[in-house]
Length: 200
Image 1: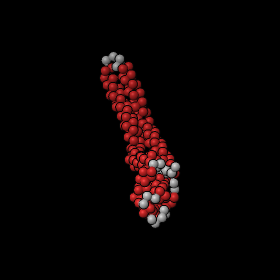
Image 2: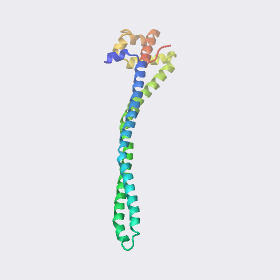
Image 3: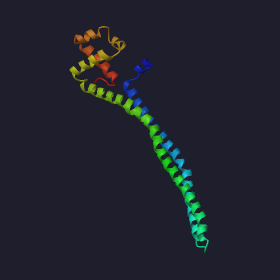
Image 4: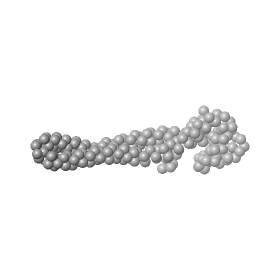
């Protein structure tokens, strides 16, 4: 797998990785929005409960008011209606509380679902990407300067796999120490390719 990855140009790998990260973030946002919509549907029974409880309480209060106008026994007849209206208001409050709980849940669950994918992007992919951008930017700035090419060659000698260095010849390190311009250019080109850059 590593051998296959080494054959793929760095710039292409970076592009594919960037596209996959964008797709990953987009899908994560879509999943979070879907969770929000699903949880929001749980508030429907609460809304119905609140509406029904409020309606019953208003009707009972109205009926109690009418019964209360009956001479002599009106006050005694009003008490059951008032108690029933209070119970209906309690049902309406329970429905409202259920809606508030669902609203909080509709914020918390999508946030939790989105936090893990975004954390992977922000704390794993983004630092690596920024580090590559910084290194590639410095390499691009110095690649045309002879001293910069020498630094790139030194970097290649220090960081490139021995198999890659051996492809340049068995005495590549000796040639670099001797100041051979072809060896320096070959090593610098190797390092530039590792960063996804081309020699000019």
